[in-house]
Amino acid sequence: TDPTAIVYTSGTTGKPKGVIFTHATIAGEMHEWHLVEPIQPQGLRPLLVLPLFTAAGYIWGVARVILHGGTLLLQPSFVPARALEVIIEQHATCLTGPPIIFEQISRVPAFEHADLSTVTTAHCGGARVPADLLIKWQKRGVSLRQIYGQTEVGGSATAMPRDEAALHPEKCGWGGIFTKIRVVGPDGNDLPPGEQGQILVRGPG
Image 1 (tube, rainbow, N blue to C red):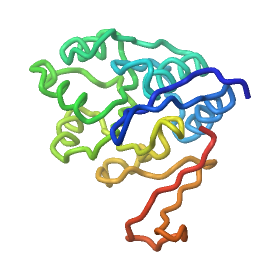
Image 2 (image 1 turned 90 degrees about the vertical axis):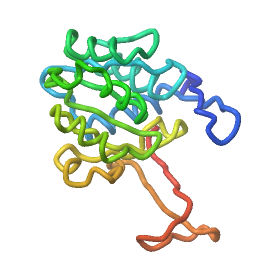
Image 3 (image 1 turned 60 degrees about the vertical axis):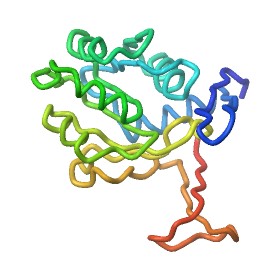
């Protein structure tokens, strides 16, 4: 239960806040997502182009590789053409980030003929993924799967399963078996499907 990291929020609705994570919360988040997202036979080789002070950088980059074993392909900054080269040359298996990262990589001329067959996991979050961007990556054999979450829950609370992402690219999936998600109204009571409200998430992270 000892604190192990302070990870900073994006600050999209105010000043960034430092979220304290313990060894248990990080290990719990990674354990749950290993059940949701088993590591493929070729191993764990994520390409990380996001800052290390974020959940995507520290938890889904550094901590995940330490806990599960693997190779972290860490880039000092995001350069789309270089990111594409690293994916191809270093056989990256994972790429996570906001839509703008996937969009800029898809604009690199070499993307049209790139061999992206090693990329088994491509999680896109932070904003809704445009349909044309999904199609661009699907043509290269990569299924962009929307995720939903926030720093306070370990970064990711939901993800579309691999076998359903192509059928429902507009959805962000559901949480792991230890995560509870509710949508409530102003009175705190659960709302029926289709109603808009506040999203409450509780899980290992």
